Length: 298
Image 1 (tube, rainbow, N blue to C red):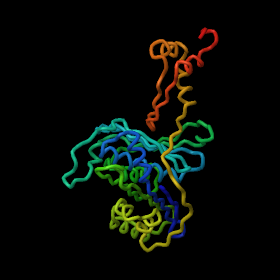
Image 2: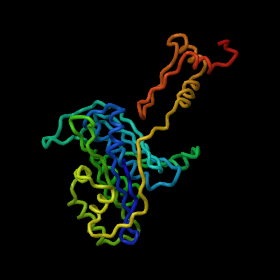
Image 3: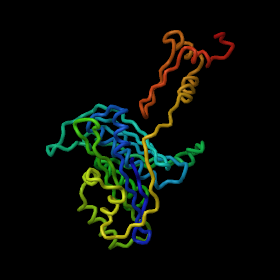
Image 4: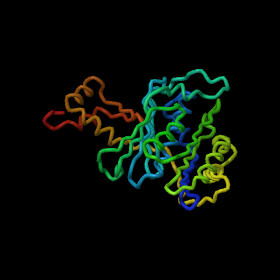
């Protein structure tokens, strides 16, 4: 079961969120049929969204989005404060050559563009205030660096971010996925900051730790070195979409009666596919007829 922890260190001046997201990324990759390199990029985005979303208030929603000129064109990951995430990519099958060291060239597949963070307050309660949208230029395309750059430039929070996805050549293709986010809060000691920077620079890749059985707490301790860790919360996290048959019906109904009559006449029904999870909803001719007003004479 995928999990995430929220913890502090150094008398509350350091915040750390760490998570194992292997099952989540495996589910997303399966649903969207992504190529290996897109899977690596997509998994990092999903993990990053979950880590950052754990810092928002209850009932809020956070979205990480990349719009770029690379082969993938764009990636979106939407997470809730409750620990759920969903997402999609614009070009699921893009696949550049691997790097000379055999690693996935995520930076190439992302390319240049803009990295967005969108915060929506009270979303789960049905409120629809104007969202806060922050953005920065993509600095590396490796996603962890781009998220850290955004936090430093747009939110003035010095942060260290590690994200990783390890794939295999056979099912289940996602062998390990996870990440961690370390943030320096007001009052953080410069010596502590320097110690954490050095520790994270020497740390093994997060997927190496996860393959070896590391928990989110193990990953947090890896990043903090000798600093004491106080775990504030541990929660299960999951890939979960908010689509439903009811929403599919509402979407078709919003097209108007003329379009619905055209679907009845030409297709004898309708099919709606959710872009976030690829779930398909089939509506029969009778379902469409039920959307028409009595004046249309069914």
